Structure formats: C-alpha cells, structure tokens
Image (tube, rainbow, N blue to C red):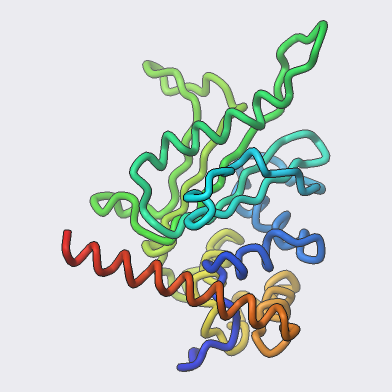
Length: 242
C-alpha cells in the first residue's frame, strides 16, 4: 500500500543508509542483508563488528557521493558496503582501489604465509550502470580466463542496480528479493505486505518511521534528503543536456 507523503526515511540518503546499516543498534539488519547478498555462495556470517573506515573515501569530493560501511565478520571476512547515488566515471576502478585496503591490512610483520580472509565489496547503485543489460545483480570474482574456474575467492564484488529491480510482491522469492523490494519501496510503504512480514523487516519499518525520529535526527534527515534531491535534480538536468 503506497501513499503520497513519505512515511519512512529514504534509505538512499546518507542519513537513511547510515541509520539502517551503519549503527550498532541496527547491526542485525546489516548482518541479515549481507547474508542475503552472499547466500547461497557462502555460509551465513555469524557476527560482525564495525571497523574504522577513514581510509575508505577520505577525499572531500568522495564524501558527497559515497558513504561506506566497513565491517569485519567474526570469522575474519571483510565487507565494504556502499551506496552509490550517482554514476561515477571510474566506478570499477574505484571499487578495486578500495578493496585493496582490507586485503593489505591483513598483512603481518615477520613470518607470514600470505593467507587471506575474503574481502567483499557490495555496492548498491541508485542508478543504471549498463542500460544494455537487463540484469540488476552482478557478481564479479577472479576467474581463470580459459576455463571460467574460480582462481581465487578472496576478492569478490557485488553490484546491485536498484532502478532495474522491478519485482512485485508476488514475484519475491529469495531473502535478497525481499530486501531489494523493501529498500526500493521503503519511503512510501505504509505497512509490510504479507510476503515480507518478517521480524527483520518489521524492525526496519520501526527504525525508518519518520515520526519515530528524535528531533535532532529529524533535522539531520531533512538536510540529508534535501542534498539527495538536489543531487538527483542536478543529475537529471545533466542527463537531459547530455
């Protein structure tokens, strides 16, 4: 059920993304989301801790368009989860560049055998990366060019083009489907459709309800929403020109 005025925070704003995925209080959401993205490829990650992310995207320009969440699983795997609001020229290069940090920080002084824990970069794109490709989900890894066999599973990228995801409630099959449906429709979602009535999504609805925000959070959100809309308008205008 949709309505005209937004009921919930927009998860693609800086504030909304951090509120849902970047706070201790909502860490179980991030964990659930990461598991929904990774399965069935890997087993479920049991727990996460947030890690310093100042070396990820330190540039001033970067901060306007990118927000990163960096976390480490109990078992050692590292995750960069980011929201990209605008098309960036060297998106793939940027992903590679950032992914090298969580790999390098695993280096040990002295006698070390170079064994690594996997690094996953999960990028939610609030724009269409490739108009000629219908797929909204791209899983990228290191493969043998001839056989297509996995060369190493220690570096993996997942790109999700949100605008291309257009499944209706009846078509939702996987947990990942449900997550994308919620994220895409959250802002105007009045209540959870039957198909996604799960504890974790009820928690999202609770956290995201605008009227539940404290006053200072509400002001911060309004500002964040304005920045988001300004950027969207600027992008739309440049697309029409281009």
